[in-house]
Length: 226
Image (cartoon, rainbow, N blue to C red; front, side, top):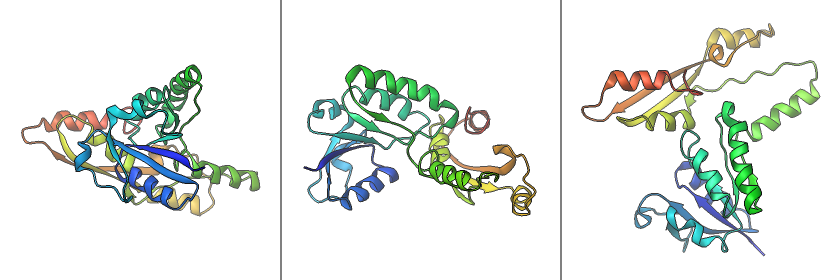
């Protein structure tokens, strides 16, 4: 019997999950759920169904696991606990500082409904966290450093697009060269996340938007830029 998988949210991550399902013969796509007009969403799976997000609860008996593919800034903190009332859920929540809070919220709803909730199992936190764990277990006297980029951060880009007055936005993560060289030279420096990276934001504002307000809100966004 195949595992019936629902996808909640259909952006880059949702499409990636759909592709993964196609490569796993013991899984089948039960449906894609979107906040957009379902008629406007074209998916890769021939014959696959697209539903309104509001229809999800009514399909609780037709889905074994719901994979949530929204953003960590505002989507997953609300969606994962809510959907855990009806489904076994998996998400890739990656706001590190808020993981204990998110765990507690999802755990409460999953315990009440008798479902399983698996959170923060994307890349970092997630599979890359396991890579670090294995490396630290093998090199017990070593010290690990994580540098990202140069490249676009999907999560941070999503966060700045949620700011009022922002039409579109991209955030590029750029390693600080001096920090990178210090690590490569074996100096084992103590570095904060801020000391390791520069985050460049490129924003397209809505017409007539308050540019100063947008700038201040981005710079002072907790857990992202502040």
